[in-house]
Image (cartoon, rainbow, N blue to C red; front, side, top):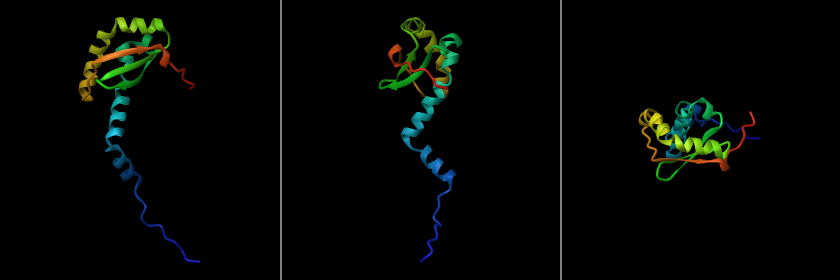
Length: 111
């Protein structure tokens, strides 16, 4: 039986660095970093009842809300939320033109 030697292994650091350079991965990491600041922009009370869901074309952020009442309250505070997100958006080189609040997107965490 012939012995096979595997010597062309790629270092895990090189694999991660290569993946991090892909456009879609970069975009996902940037969005995830923005989502981490949601509680600072929305306030702790609303952060418990809403969470960023996705980004749409045209720089529109979709936020899942626990109830339609939470969605309505957040909609009334939309301009304040966008202005609170502005420093984080600038540091991440992102733009948000609008925020849509949707109670149908809410999914309870199973943690």
